Image (cartoon, rainbow, N blue to C red; front, top):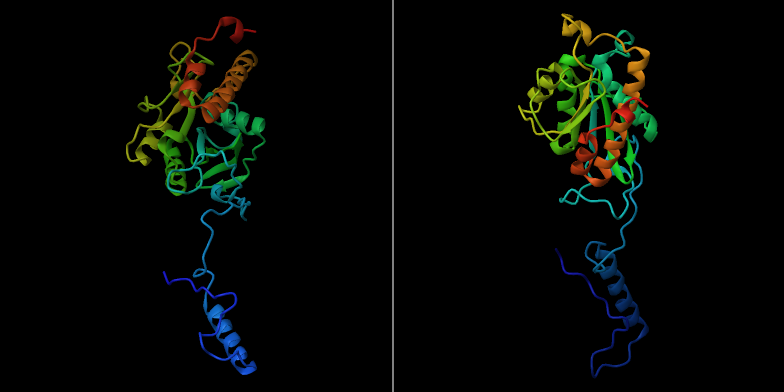
Length: 279
């Protein structure tokens, strides 16, 4: 870095010289102008502290790095923008699958989007994606459109592109091994035989270290094939119970983003009274 140029405000003539004539004064002024014009902004002294300017939204508004961030927002540790939470709901695209047990992950994302005013109108990385905030924390909502068994193709690309820490990637999906409308929030674990989760693990370099919200759909009755059972719709009573569970999941998401994963897990995994479920 070149030294900055300092120009005396009133240069004095050398000791013993005669008073500056008009020609001499003009020459001195010209010299000063040359020095000033040759000093770039980067060479001039800068204040020790500068006032931060608000970052405005950029176009297209798809980068969290371009959104205005409150001064209280935590950074990433490298001076960059705060990383978003990524909430992924698993399911199958298409009307034929709407309202089925295998698509409760999609329903969970829809509940969050509606409550937080987030539009899932963008198609990115093979998923319907919405971006917004809970409090001052940036979040992304995603519903992979790859069909269940290839969900990892979408999730892996999003995690890699946005460089999201795995502890901020929360996958929401149906679980046959949990009682109907029961929720379980865990910080990590295996795929449990769920093909969508298996695909995600494969595309995250075999890592199991990401949170998941399991949504119970119960076991199939009698000898019904589980593959057929997960594609069955809910009856009216089941839908009412499920709606309650999904709104409990919404509250868990808010707690997670604003107060941390542990508080959210305590909230979710605390035994739910039968009065609450059957209100």
